[in-house]
Image (cartoon, rainbow, N blue to C red; front, side, top):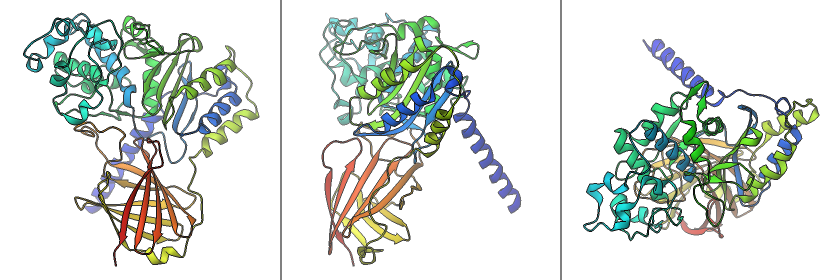
Length: 502
């Protein structure tokens, strides 16, 4: 019986691994040269992206004619890991709205107030009554954005609709809650969540299976943020839009709707806006765009899609301009001869990694603090105490949370050590109900070194999320000062004081 169980589990793991493998290698692959792109141009793009300040690249995929010609996942990141996409999610919401319109469940002229009678204020203004689905799509609801509202209350729709409303359809004001209302409307008219509707209409036909979406306290997918998906699935979606809604001979999304999504609907102070998409400075190019540098770049005149996931504290213009100015001018309409540059690109793809912590492998202090529990003052991470165990070329840090849950994080010297935990990672936004709809476990990679005899530095990457932490322990007898820097925050980090227990 035991052998049968072991065999079944082995088969299950094999099938699961095969499913993930198929998921991330399903798009056809080619060489850059076969599709008219010199490998040295792709290598130059990858090198330049990796050198950008205040930026950690997590993945880059370059497609032409529907084929992946190059991709990098700097270690410890890997193609099978999903990534949270912030406002890149909005473009998927636009696709769902288009599908509902095509199904005759929804019209762009429908009045928003009619979908939420239970959430309307006692007095409905003329402007609120006039607000349409199209106004939400174009970010012209007439309601001033309130980015803190989702953090302090749970009835987001009622709170949004109770705010003063200017004349809708006139003034662009970017607001994730407007997209959230679109998600709620899709759920109301289809009887299924936005995610389930997209699974039925798009994701399942495209074999996009590893996908999730955060859920609000009101039970709707968050819409304006919260999509959790693999890079290859982003590339598939970008290719779907480039193909005007066609996928393997099937018209999954109406071509006319894709055209509207990708066409200027509103002028802004920066790039112009379509339906939940941005138009780019490169002529004809459009993008899905998420905080901290999540991009699907669609470039029709070159028949190309470029996907970037990262954590950057810049505005992302440099990343996009590297694509416009370094890659696209080298693209030709005829195949090129493969040379040494392709081999160099392959080496780059295989060896690319994020930097390890720099310093020595061991310090005399390690013996003093080995196995000692360090209690911490109250902190935003909910850590009650940390225990460090030092092994040859490895550090194990046991985290005890305020609720007494514990887990171990692993750190290698000049290598990434991987741990799998159930605890949620740090997150740059704090809406009520955050992470609802996102299931772990989360994979955490770690690197360590001793920059000085009394200073230990640990680097933590949550590789199937977006976050990273830099932890620097300064030891002084029984006192420990822990400096924590989040990769999504500017500044010098926060200092958490700790005491070593006997």
